Length: 127
Image (cartoon, rainbow, N blue to C red; front, side):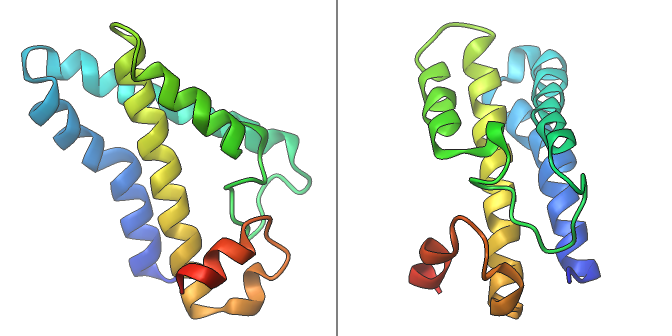
């Protein structure tokens, strides 16, 4: 189960760090960029397709449809398009990275918790 530190880091990376990304990389329109980065959180609507919708210790990567490797390749493709698709791609990829960090953290503390995860082999290889 996620501890407070993991939860705080997870939500900071989803909500706070995009502000830094917007300000550093999209300085001229950082407010607009930040709103777009926050809007990429809508990718989590795919969690509503799961049953149960929320399950402690579930790794989103390769579990939810918009969190699959195939979707991630699509998000990489957005980086090669013009505005605002590039910012959307950055937001979606950073979202996936944040969720992956969460999976790594959970797995590092409780290997049995993610034993049925679709990416357990990758987690084992990394840790």
